[in-house]
Amino acid sequence: MKFELPCKTSQEILQIDAREVEAMLQGPALNIPKFPEAMLTLKDGRTLYIREAKMEEVPAMLGYMEKLMKVEHDFYDIVGSRVYSEILGWKRKRLKDPYTLVGLIDGVWSGFANGRLMSEDINISLHTMALVRGGRIGAAMYYAKAYYGFEIIGNKEWWATYESYNGWMRWGLGMAQPSYPWPDVQHELGGAKVYYVTKKYWDSTVKNYVRQMVGADLNFNVTDEVRKANENFIVPEEVLV
Ligand SMILES: CC(C)(COP(=O)(O)OP(=O)(O)OC[C@H]1O[C@@H](n2cnc3c(N)ncnc32)[C@H](O)[C@@H]1OP(=O)(O)O)[C@@H](O)C(=O)NCCC(=O)NCCS
Image (tube, rainbow, N blue to C red):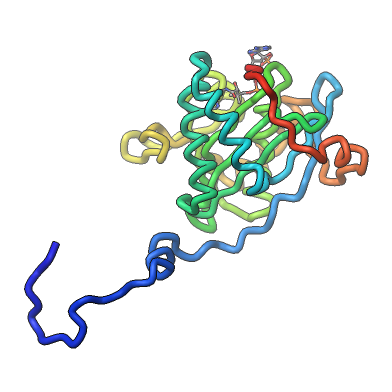
């Protein structure tokens, strides 16, 4: 769009450095503490190792999500597509204050959980995926990111929503999460209901979730043995869900 100039101007064409535009588009990042690595013993005795994803792992993660977005059961397609865009959004800096956690079993990528901070107080849960079924890996990954929000970052509220029956069953029902009036309050994932956990409810009740669901707590004292077993990030050749 162009308007006539209401004043004489010495430079009719202004040059803008794209880096200045980038600062406008991104905005300043919050100073978020890192998720420390953690491990958890699954019901079948396997150890799930949870850590932050690394930027250099993004191409491999995107490649695998391309496969998952074609899986037409249990809503893996819609969740896979959205997760693809969120991983890319992290890389291209088009998500505000994102965090991305991966769960590995003997190095094999088995779980995913991510979210972002709307503010210092409100943590938006984006997605959780079990990349290997039947081990309650998804349950543990979601708990780990909520733990990160409440116990490490210091958030006051957790906002989630559910695209799948398994997701709703695991956490909407599983954590007995209340929801805000709808459609007045909508989650950024498609305008669905916002289910929420407050810090007070987390402290009184939800903190016990993973012990009940998986039978063990997150252990932040990761052993050298577990670290060594997970030193390589192995993306499965085939879809395992
Ligand atoms: C939601 C999700 C993360 C939950 O993961 P999870 O806690 O590891 O649990 P699973 O989905 O693997 O299994 C759910 C139940 O079905 C059973 N199950 C389902 N598919 C199975 C399979 N292929 N093999 C074995 N068990 C299976 C599990 O044993 C489990 O039963 P349980 O409650 O007795 O443990 C996972 O279902 C998922 O990634 N779904 C697709 C993406 C999605 O919907 N994400 C959440 C968006 S809201």
